[in-house]
Amino acid sequence: MTQTIGAPTRRLTVAQAVVQFMAAQHIERDGVEESFFGGAFGIFGHGNVGGLGQALLEYEHDFRFLQGRHEQGMVHMAVGYAKMRNRFGAMAVTTSIGPGATNMVTGAGTATVNHLPVLLLPSDTFATRATGAVLQQIEQPYSMEVTANDSFRAVSRYFDRVTRPEQLAPALLEAMRVLTSPVDTGAVTLCLPQDVQAEAFDFPVALFEHRVWHVPRNRADLSAIRRAAEAIRGAERPVIIAGGGVIYSSASEELIRFAEALGAGIGVTQAGKASVPFDHPLALGALGASGSAFANRFANDADLVIGVGTRYTDFTTASNTLFRNPGVRFVNINVAELDALKEAGIALIGDARETLRELRQALEGHSTPSSFRDEVVAAATGWRHEVDRLIEPDEASPSLSQAAAIGLVNAAADERDVVVNAAGSMPGDLHRLWRPGSVKGYDIEYGNSCMGYEIPGAIGAKLGDPSRHVWCFIGDGTYLMMSQELLTAVQEKLTMTVVVVDNRGYGSIAALSNSLGSQEFGTRFFERSDDGRLAGPMLEVDFAANAASYGAEVFTAATAKQLTEALASAKACDGLSVVYVQVDAQARFGGSGAWWDVPLAEVSNVASSIDARVVYDGRKATQRLYM
Image (tube, rainbow, N blue to C red; front, side, top):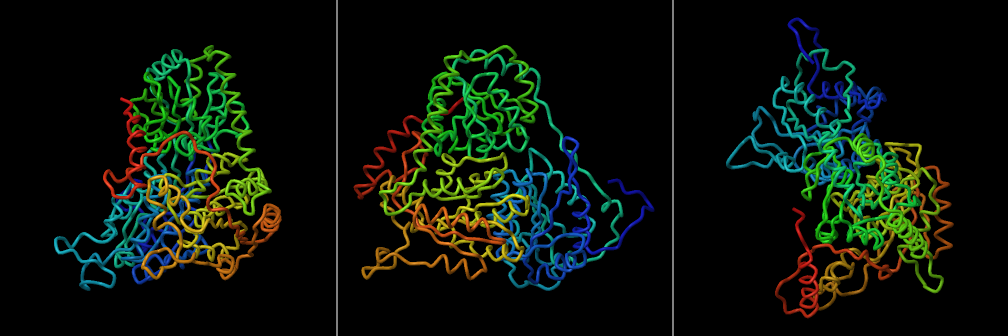
């Protein structure tokens, strides 16, 4: 935008200008243009009711407004929306000052960790300072310019505070630069003081004209491609890791062509889970600490790891113990330089789809020996058979295992359905067991592993693609954190199903606590006993009644047959349905053969802690840096 002297202007408040600007933004890649903003979530307080609240009212026929129940939940809905839109769409979130604003910080971190575009518009205290200290303002004795909103700096990809109307145009344009960037996208925070929101200014009309942000497909350096091709030609046991970048660059088909030409197996991260069909002959399944022993065995032995769109988090690398070949090397394809250079890899910094194509062309005629390909296919086949075994309900057991419940929901899901989850033991089970029917059929928020994402994230996914049925898995512990957004789903008349899996507390951390010698302390929902300990009777919560109170159609199940019938009834509902099922809290299946580094007490008087430390020291000794 270039403003010239005498150019036409429009007199608007800052808040009105923000809404008008958002309505004019579009995004394009590969010749497909879409409106960028799907609307705004908001909870109004004194900090924004007369500013952004008024503006959203004035333009409610032009720009969609959605009401939330909790500020963190609204950001999670925006994250789910952006993920379903493949980062080619975003939502804005407006809140009041103080606690209304800081409630968004966790959601901002979730968006930024997962590289998903969300525009946060927290209100701020008076820029003029004319009123003195205001309601919900935190005063700092060392600076009057620091407010509670400065807490967003650590969790935002871009942060700005607009204290004068003249600052708005460049701030909005910088916000869009980041929101539409494949490299830099994440939470963008524009703090808007409550007085500035209502202030009028003559904005250039050009700011509100139809604007298209073009997303490029950057190519990797040709010399880097040649170095990578040389390394791959010299490898005998390569393995491919598919991360979320495969999906966001629409590179799944090219990844499969690459793997088939090379003859290498593909292991998937949580974010990359749906990038490869579950039944593809080279699909080794989940890899890493929450992965399968089948995929991890190939990672253990690999002399070359080809990482595509992965951040190499501790779950993917098993805390840097997964890749055990002394001579292992890495080739990393990533649009972000930060991630491409990890593990001292040969960095191919560029779009995953285009880079895979060019690397495949550079390797034309090269393939691993047929014996190695056969080994990969046999392992992939073995893993699929293992999944069939794990999800089979045990007719002799009085209760369902979580794995069996997951299998039954998967069987009820159609090809285009979406599963959403975030934290607890279910992400690991879903990573191993779920069979996605499509590339966008799997949304497990595991970048931030944020408890409370599940229900709002599922709402965002449904808003992002209303044509898909969304299945939200949520544990009883997480349900108690953010169940109120069920009312948002009812309000918006969304047809989706929430499956509440009750394993009597924080089951995932209970299992981890046991493995660390901490004896499930503080992880189960017990009443306070007479001796002052949390060791009394189990607390009973009527989750079905709670869900029904929000207006959901509720079904309960205890057996495989009942769950199958409940799922069919739930999916037939026109609106929000909830299925409550209690599972065996102790029924867990075998591990991944990989480790996750969670330090525990080096000295202790508790016998179980002492024993666990011995095991920890042994695993820690296998940890290495790949330099």
